[in-house]
Length: 118
Length: 114
Image (tube, rainbow over all chains, first blue to last red; front, side, top):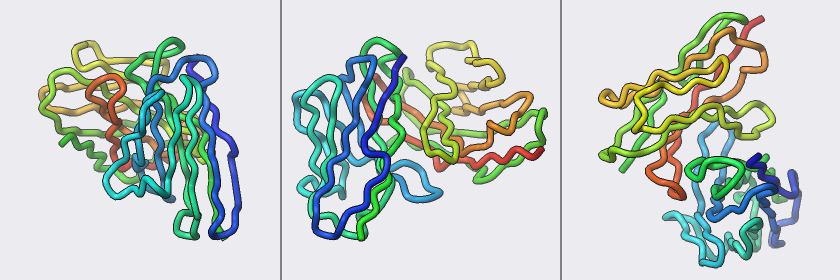
């Protein structure tokens, strides 16, 4: 139980285009989802927290107009990187916590999405 | 603010031997949860073990066990009978309450030598 999927696993895009990353909880209802960014050999950096049906809460320094987060259902959250630039190239990971399939205090992670902006 | 510190950036262990990864944290809360996550080269974050602060008994999961010292704010991970597949980055993490943010340590890169 408590499986989280992420799609795509790898995406390459041109500078100036937008990219959407999907995060799905497959066997439980995710009341809260989190989006992280990770640079090589570093820890995870929280970008934002989203609760189903509510606006996301962004961490200080994260541009909410650039990183659009939507959590429209209890099983799906999306992160859209708008007008992507090479400095947005990174590994993006989502996690989810909720009911059934695991403990409500435990975050279960997706496999991550590697974004490369040319 | 809560902080999590992993003082060992890198550790190595011989296959079949035991290794202990250190973690300390700082919080003023009395109830919270602590975790160890593993991130192998695939970069998938995998939950290794979970500890509730109100439980005095140390959590165990097969070859993985923790030494939770609440007063000292210490939460070390012991891996017994190390296997090649245990090689990964290990992150210690803290959470105050359900649905709140995880605070991660900087990670310990574990190498398992055959």
